[in-house]
Image 1 (spheres, rainbow, N blue to C red):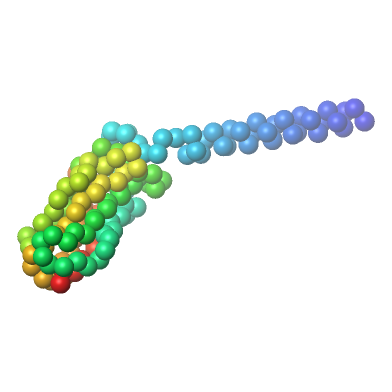
Image 2: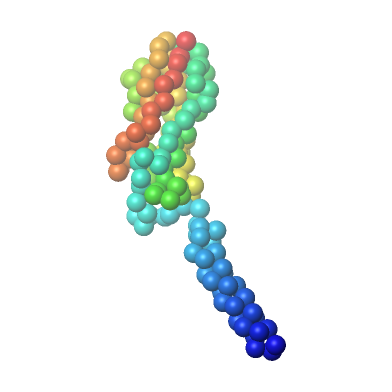
Length: 137
């Protein structure tokens, strides 16, 4: 009977060690974002959104454009310079063009011209495939 308990204790100990090893390999213990050139940007994982999607074409009312640059695991990539491409009728105010520790960059958009415009984000690695359409009325 002692051998049976010894076997169970050994088995549970190995299971505990294996579990701790697997937990240590997850992103729980990794920084929010990869810094520098250590992580590769995956443009297909990155995304762009704006809020609101429409604003008055008075040159004063702003839309907040947010860009997230992510790696292959969906983790933000820090220190990437983002450029916004859109119509020359849209004014772009760079709030934070360099991505932070979560991979986020922030811009404000205004326009004095009414219309619907496509907006895209460009990184040194290329253009994020997702675009947003904004409407100034």
